[in-house]
Image (cartoon, rainbow, N blue to C red; front, side, top):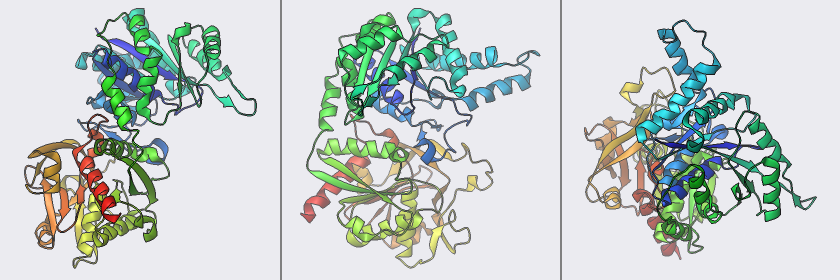
Length: 532
């Protein structure tokens, strides 16, 4: 029977509940315990697919094609596992399921209410993951902060879960923020006290409080928090700011989090071994040589919009034994070439809509003319095809996403997408196979004839232009097994020019950089050395 560790948050949002939950999972994995994770998002959206990246950050895509919260990316990277779309529970999914049952008559004429119908559905969704994965421990992160109206049904559901599963099988971890007031020169514990009081008012007593802070807090403050929040002294854990999120499992492990958790949920494990994780953290601390990568996107003001790409570059840099410095460049308008001149390589991420496309096309032209390594992902690949076509006789080449009446639609909507009216969950989503061509960058990077990668797109390379663009020097190095969909393009007579229709960033791990990202980082480093 699975055990459950429920992670809640208080005081402020974005204090790192997801990283905390993932780190606890990483620690438990070091004991040989099988761990899976669930992220609960209290918003009414059915999934994250239609949310603006400026508001919610990156949309993470699972193997089975669910558009989810970015915290699932943290879970996959820290736990080195693949999660299903069911691991992201939203209010929209819960209410939709309950309404469907009501319409079918499943409730036999009952008045459908928050309790018990909504809370029962929440518990059912949580247990579904436990039953499907048969994991020893299921991490359940509840989004938002305690006190939010939206999260109340979820808190009530996990309170009931504790009673039904038994005290020894459900543990509550509360993540709070302990601010340091520089004017007073001291930390303040009152926000943590009030947050814990709010949680206890729901009927949930935290078993552990993890105190996020800008600076380390001392033993006296921990004792004070333990006393006023009614938890054991060794259950008050401090997690100050660190330079890398991958250090968090090591910090929590130093405070014996794993030992306390196992004792609390009555589990035994092997002798813990985080030595490999420590090696990963050390490899990420390399200070030189520095490779400068420019990311040309339209959401660059919010790095979380490209969080998986950022982390994938870090993983690749560690594998190549360099330090990556990312220069965030807005693609909103034409790019000032001077911003690109000091960079060792360029990366164009995915996106939707015409806004920002001109800057991305400028970056493609610069790469081709100056032989600078360029990596295009999804829309980035499409921009590469458009600009290449424009430079080789098709001056008005475009995507029908931006110009439905273009005379040369080198990028066009997928046939099965033409009649789609609903935007949510209707793209080509999830993992699909790709055949690789011999003698290409992609084949050399993967060292495999066929690979599986995750997709999220509606538009694709127009096959009517496949032959003529290949004659002009474009290489199609990856294609679907039925030869209908172009997955990867490269360029003749260029040191490193690769665009892929899929999203490789979703499969990169700190202990195993994605092959294409590693190849890209090597090319960037080679370009740096050649310029020196």
